[in-house]
Image (cartoon, rainbow, N blue to C red; front, side, top):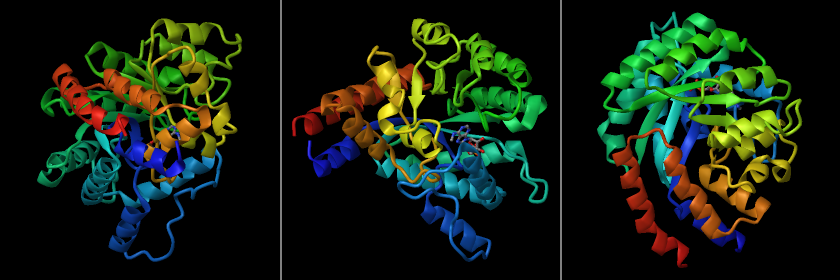
Length: 348
Ligand code: 6MZ
């Protein structure tokens, strides 16, 4: 397929985005608005322009800077609305946002009011009018320790029952070099046992076999990255076998991994390893703002790197509906939407 035709195809392809961190997804346009609100001039220093790489640690520095701009409910609501609109413009029909409920003493924002601000944006008339279904996962940031992890799960439990199916699960994320899995295990266990869906960042960096093994015992519903599963100490055996046997879907973020240098090149990305075994995989952006990407671009990169046909891209996108944390009736509606688009875009 020619480049411009592929680009059009990927843009028109209906897509599910299952791994998007809210504050990492903020576009330059919205960051400029936030800086103006705070009367800050200068240039946005948080997004990695096309082709530019940084280390994972530098990436976490960028989140620190962004968090300084979203310290009150109004800005949280504004960025949530903007991020959803941008995903919708990119042809995303189902979006699972994830975000860390954050407390900011000097603005009075609490973890609860943070979640309320995100939910208010999702439910606003402007966003409800868009052709996109949005669900929310509450993130446990590894750096915040055991107590905050449990508090986050309690909030998620409460909103699971009271948010009209909007809050559906919990994510474990944050700098993988920080914190110990034993700190989060009890909270994640409570989440798993009380009906919340679990998506866990696993094996994002090398040398975490013990943690990965322990967290896999929780039978997460999906895995974020899983970059070093196949490079575990035992060769390709145990962890891979476990994930394969349980068919745990992988959320794969090509540009994020290459830009953070946990994967050297697109060609070396572990997508190929799993895809060749027909393991459930879905493409995601991770942090579309910080990594200057879109979900359509991620599909395009996958197609050119791994020689995927339009039909294969279609199948990856369609099959991703199966791994969404939404209710059955929502998934049925999404499948209907996909099938409506199918003849229009695959026939071209
Ligand atoms: C692990 C990541 C991440 O929650 O404030 N986050 N955690 N690995 C990654 N790979 C690059 N990218 C983002 O969004 C920002 C937060 O998401 C997590 C980090 O905890 C980061 O602070 P929220 O909306």
